[in-house]
Length: 394
Image (cartoon, rainbow, N blue to C red):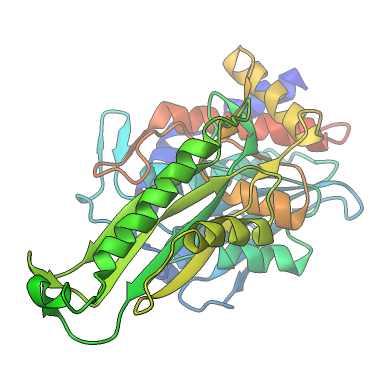
């Protein structure tokens, strides 16, 4: 195996990875508009000789499935990635030294490039796996525009996420096996009537939606402190975070509407009904004035998850990392939501995250280092060999 692995990893091309990552980044793909980048990705994978099925359940955000099936009854590993990026301006993509800049460079088009290159190396070296490899891509990942619809549609098919999966982002020098879930809340606080001067509104007993939003914000911050005393060893306590509070148009005019949003992040033992009850309890804790109406919307991009450290894919990745990098891959928790949350909870299979080491996801200037993409590609190859095994003579 070591001789074969040495042969395969020597075939990983930094130049090809650089060029492919840059080409992917050059194609804009903000969430909800990923047709062009998916078309480019599809043609690239077809160039490896693999059939690619494109799903158009969401026409502007297509998903793809590419299958390299060697043993119909053998185990299957799925490499997964999202091709959409956040809606944020970025300078035009460029390369400087060994660093690739551009929106999506780290999140997560370099991971997509590593998936393709690892598969290319295996195919071109005629490796006969004792199982099957699937490449899956999708969009509608980035909230608040997307809510994992593309990934959930792939999972619902039942034949894409079968035995184990690797998500090509997040963990790099650690392996998250336990992660928080995330609830995005949007709350609108309104009253009927017109905008009034404060000195007219107060004598009439007219409520100020902004003041009511402040009361709810205070309650959520209190709840955040209450939760802080119950910390999980790997992922800490459950948390509330306030992202925006809006309302009003002038310093002494009482508005008719206030809006607030933020997140509630929770532990893996929670299900959606638990999440709804938790957030609704904070709203119900306020004694709302009679002229105030409160409307809330709750969105979730993934429940919390737990993956056994003894799972085969966990062991395969940790052994691969040790072989390629030369040190142990420590287990940890993850505070952010990724595809891992959805795959673990909704597909019900062991799943790991291993990305390309970028720390600039969603930043004003996003970049990834080429040596890290190369390293991750090699780790993917070693993990696939460890998990599936190879036929004699490969």
